[in-house]
Amino acid sequence: MYAVTGMLHLAVPGVYESIIPEALPGTPRQWAVWSGVAELGVAGLLAIPRTRRLGGAASAALLVGVWPGNIKMAVDWRDKPWPAQAVAIGRVPLQIPLIRSAVAIARG
Image 1 (cartoon, rainbow, N blue to C red):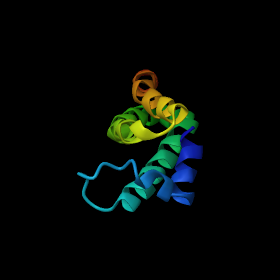
Image 2 (image 1 turned 90 degrees about the vertical axis):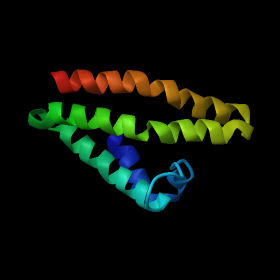
Image 3 (image 1 turned 60 degrees about the vertical axis):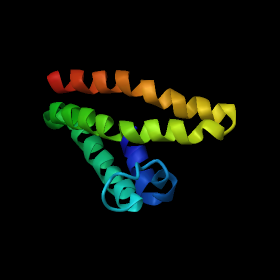
C-alpha cells in the first residue's frame, strides 16, 4: 500500500494537494511530495524483517500525521456525488484499524 501511494504522491502530487490543510507551513506541493517520500520510506522499513518494528512505528506516526488531510477531504467533498462522499468519509474511521495494526507491528 505504501509503495503504491508513495509513488503516486511523487508522480501526480497535484491530486493530493487539495487535501493538505491550509494551516501547514510550506506549500501543498511540498507536503504532497514529502509525504510520498515518507510513504516510500515506511514501505522500505516494513519490507525488511530487521527494520519491520521501526517501520510499524513510522507507519503509525505517518497515519496519524495524514489523518487531518483525510478529515479535510471528507469535509471538502460534502458537495460531491454520494459515492465520492462515501469514499472520503470512509477514509476517516479507516485510519483507526490501520494505526492499530501499525502499532501492533511496532510492538512485535
